[in-house]
Length: 314
Image (tube, helix red, strand yellow):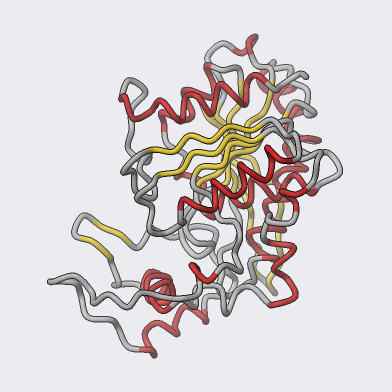
């Protein structure tokens, strides 16, 4: 699987420049390319990186005829969700439509129409994938993998009353966590705050995300009240011209409640939009991260990719 990196946006911070990069995964059979699949990573807008698109997903997308692309965005909380993740994802999308096809033909002999673009994303990246429906040239189809939506719902703002599990590390001090607010310019990559032994609170960024989610304040510093409609796809889902959308959602997900995918699917159905919902019984958030193509549990992902492929060129 050959891949190449391109800078799609550069942002100046005084003497420093943050280069936002997209990794483009090229199909083995370049003559079969019929579209572009743009992926947005998860991580609660605070952690993660474009490297989080799993190899099995890339392979499935390539075999379905897609040039698979995974893009950076600047991470909160030293930038808002609107100005960082959303704005940078829109920039990546427009670059993939307008400039990437020229680069693919010139440098790799791959001819693909930028109009044939689909989006997909995990967790908060699923929400970003849905938001691309608001653009003048929306995606042909969307694959939402347990994505963020209905962000005003009390589920995200209630917090957990359950005590930390036995052996869990003690929460770090507020002073330690506050160090994340000094990270300017905001990074474009950060490791997930979960290691082999559970939550990893050894970095201010990881500790910030875990503790804010536990307290139900994960959006307080990164989404202003008057910005919710621009970062939450809830209202977009009511549009009769919303792109065809496939939802994958685990029923045991404690990060994004399964009801949100059910609500969104029902809303699209009501409006006559082509949509499918695959509920994975007993699956947790991020259940697909380490799957291989031949794993039985990969079935919902493959069905989602097939759904995307059906709508390219229509």
